[in-house]
Amino acid sequence: MKLPGLLLALALTGTAHAQATAPSATDTLLLNPRRSVDGQLIRPFSARYTMLMRQAGQEKPVGSVATSYEYLSRPGQELALKRSVISFPTGVIVDSGTVDRRTLYPQAHRSHQPNGRTLALDFAGARVTGFNQVGTQRTAVDLTTPAALFDSFSADLVVQALPLRAGQAFKFAQYVYEKGGQDWVQGRIIGARTLPSPDGRTSQPAWVVQTFGKDQSTVTYWLDASTRRLLQVEFVQAGRELIMRQAE
Image (cartoon, rainbow, N blue to C red; front, side, top):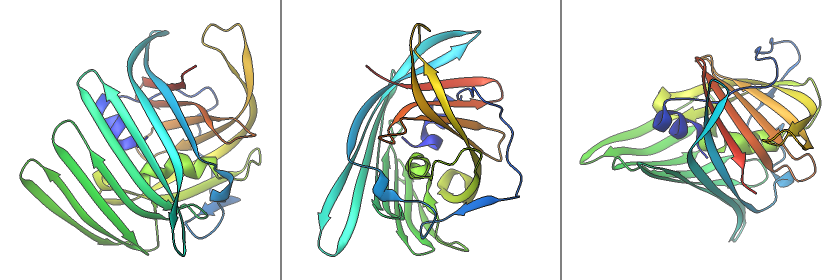
């Protein structure tokens, strides 16, 4: 999934179950595509999620996400491809991104949206090139950032590749076209929790990680500690809530 695409398409985000307070700079782990994450922890997978909007304590289905992650066979390279198909009643967004599967450094990102928009990005060190096209209008992208960035489409992979140390604060810079380029994200590894089922009758063990954006948004990730798979993702911004819950 790509968070900017989800948020722009639905104009809402999801809720957090832990305290939504951004960490201070003290003892914050700086993540970048050269260190501090271990992409080898993420194994190939495919998963489906239901998207739900929560209002006044009630949940309403608003779409679905089918996502996959697979290793690519290319001589001399260890790459992986992530692909997400986000379905809404009004259309479908198809996103794909290629990363170095060891460091999660991005190689390429392609996004096709129902409004006729196509975003094509290529990453080479600290340089990002490509284009954003809506209809016949194409805008070129050519930006050199202070350092190599993660791609926002891979933000969930970054979270999945973190060292699971309760209380650890972290931050990383990602490329977001909609925000003009470099965008900083802060976060904290909350620790082990139990994730209740929707009916509240059962629960399962999980690790909780939260990230905080400059726009006052909070994203809460629930991970299966043994597989690093995402069980649930929740977004909150200005009181608007979106939940992405793994389908049975």
